[in-house]
Length: 408
Length: 173
Image 1 (tube, each protein chain N blue to C red):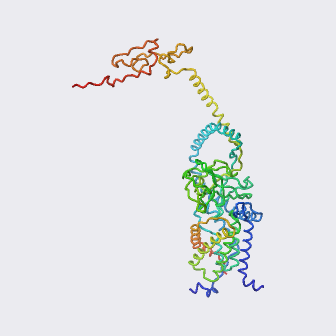
Image 2 (cartoon, helix red, strand yellow):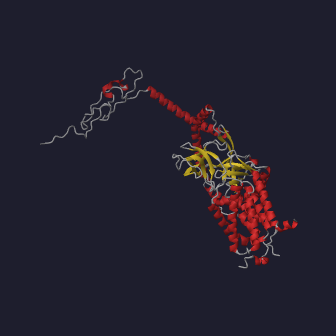
Image 3 (cartoon, rainbow over the protein chains, first blue to last red):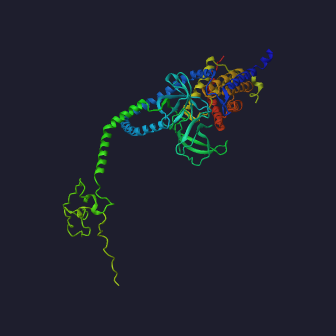
């Protein structure tokens, strides 16, 4: 027996290791409710320990590389940036002021929306708090679109938190370690995010394909879906808040596996291949967060005197418009025009008489010859002449009075 | 031709390295494999852990050592991904075993053989990953074979440069 083992020890070692790994794999997969096999997203203790060890070994050098690369690139970048920082600061301050005013203007609409949602018993969730993190490494595998960030459970990162950039969604936290966390990108084949097409309001599930392109799968063929349409998060997956940008429709292709179904290839809004700094949404709440509320209050306060003044002016204009009759009521005959109404207790002051009236003066005789000196001066107190007569257009001097007669 | 065949295998030298090199080089390969795709994006067409596994398996000419190193490196790669642990492990275990077994029989000092071998083992490793995913685990995993071909070519190019560099770490008795 010993000699047999000695003779085939290479093969024995190979088969033993292979068998052990196959058994280990069998313990990690399970059949889902749909009947498909899938890897258990919740790692067992042993698997999690392996992942933790691997992370502990790889993360420190990755941080070091990342730090060196960042430091080197920032060294010169900071110098050039600082040259224009004062000007940029002024521009940003102006932008902040403008945005505060705009935010205050939108507040009323948002609050009304919240009230309506409360009536409908639907709660919109707002991004309450985000944590900026750095991407320090990837999984290193073509088939695994996952990456590591430099903050973990010590910083409040938890599993299934959404990860975004200012451009759009990126992925969700899959595994959390004390000082790092693994994020599964939306373009991975095993990811899933509820999305909605902005214009057509068609909902679907977003996941990646073999080449790392996000695509919406399981859609019935629909001719309304066109390239260029925006794709937003639908908010039904309990991970991404509703309305975040996902990308735009790049292409609509038939699903080769399912007749009558299509795949919508999405051009992601976030640069998933070149991620550097991302935001982890650490909290979402059904109302505005305090800092935003404070911003709104500040902008309201800043906007207050200006807004009050504008409101007062607008109200005064409206009151005057109600009280003052129009100078000309097109539906009334000339003798009943407001300017000629003697029964009005608040008569409208008549316009002063011109010193040198011409043919454009209200009440001037349109038939008066232009060259004939002053037109017939309207009587100062004659209502007939003081009131404008819109129904009688001035005769154009260029227009001939009659058709020219032909000489026989 | 005799240089390449089993008759000449007694003359083949077994490469030896300082102990730390066995740990340090695979670790560097794993870290670079995890970090470089951040810079290169979708064009990270290489598998440095596989290159290192094949290198040590060819140099040591010990199937057991090649198998164990392939297994360890593959499991480590799996632990960094979100996939089940063991997929890359199985692929690189087989790759390490085959590389060492071939190393016993042929002269792997020849560059063309090294490059050809790493190219074939890269494709084999990819095929094994697909086999494990689809047939052993029943997972629906799409694979773009063109990318796998590029990875095999990338590994071959890297091997051309890296193998002579790594040869410098050999212990001279």
